[in-house]
Amino acid sequence: MQIQPGALTLQQLRQVRQGVDAIELPLASWEVIRSASDTVNRIAQDPAPAYGINTGFGRLANTQIAPSELELLQRNLVLSHAVGVGEPLTDMVVRMVLLLKIASLAQGFSGITVELMELLIAFLENDILPVIPSQGSVGASGDLAPLAHLAATLIGVGEVRIEGKTVPALEGLRRLHREPVVLKPKEGLALLNGTQVSTALAIEGLFAIDQVARSAIVTGALSVDAAAGSVVPFDPRIQAVRGHPGQQAVARAYLSLLNGSGITQWHQDCEKVQDPYSLRCQPQVMGSVLEVLGWCGDRLLVEANGVSDNPLVFTKNNEVLSGGNFHAEPVAMVCDFLAIAASEIGGLAERRIALLIDATLSGLPPFLVKNGGVNSGFMIAHVTAASLASENKSLAHPASVDSIPTSANQEDHVSMATFAARRLAPLARNVATIIAIELLAAVQGIELRAPVSTSAILSDVISCLREVVPHYDVDHYMAPDIQAALGLVEGGVIGGFCPCEFLTEQE
Image (cartoon, rainbow, N blue to C red; front, side, top):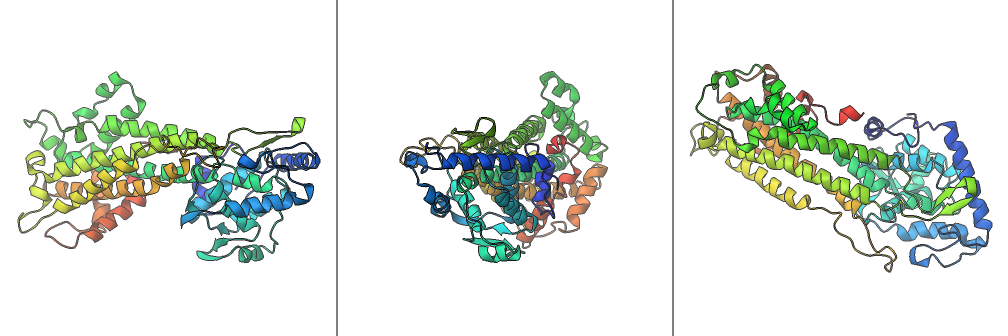
């Protein structure tokens, strides 16, 4: 994979999650890395204090460090900050963290050595993945604790994952025929400072929510036919007078999915005037989701391609400038928007499930099963969807509005970006499960409309589901049905039928 620092794409980030065989940096990147490293070495020999190079950190920034202790300073920084807790980050996220850290350091504003960059690249190329605990960062001064666990493996401390197995970091270095690095001035700080963990988690969440949003449009169209809903709300003239591009794109998607439906033709002259909002307002809600995903993708690409280290090395004037690029507020706010969008996807889908099981609204057998009473059908499957939708309301509470001072009030405002990003995965899983339940319910409803049939494309969706889940004739152990449908949602099978572009427009 050829990496142009400062110009990563979403497609490259998708690719690296599965692993890469080689990372190639431009020659110019190696030149600026050497230049910045030389600048740091010169400053380290100067008696004038330079934060993080010959001083302590945080509240100890005014403590001068003797030249003989500069390497010890960087090692101690890594070890003392490696205090993360909780479940380790997934391998896919760790690969993205490594790529983002490489891309940031390669821009030549951090002052690391060529040797350290080569080792980082070797870890990624050989899929030697630091074990990084998921909790312990407040999203300011960078993702200090989690990135310290990454840095620790480079000096032979901690653990790495190789081919799915967790082994000591020294074993990973032996695989590469390398010795643990001795960190030079500022190198430990350059590894620890940065928003790479929160950004990688945010991008992983972005991909997951994008996938479930595509699936939700497909299941939403299925629910329209299952409930004998109208396609009039998707008329392009309605969307045009409001003007939102996302709304217009989503409405076109629904019309495309429902084109040629026999059910639509069958009830064209029914007495019903308007459908409930969960059917009728899908372009307005899902169109907003589409636009949020696009905006969030843009912002996260900016962050992925930025430099969030501190202090920064500017070689032209031999200056090291302290600032606040490590503050992850841009990531935190993006994640809050993503969480809200995901919660709305699930909330709308849960309402459609409730509609389908209600015979007075859908015109279908109660709870979507014949011989009701003896059979409960989808009664409690809807309860599961409702519980997840309600849980998502709490998960979608903005994280960026919270702050807790740390480091003896030196770091007195923090972003909570890492938590904001980390909660996207369970949120996306909840929504995907709601969509899986809707898939089962909507397909069941359409089949109960037989012999009238749906559109050709939605018939293909039904066929995909019926390959793994049979029609619900009588009550049975239903949990495996939901898991099988969830596999189709999370695996991209259902979303693959969606004719509406989300992130792919930016890739």
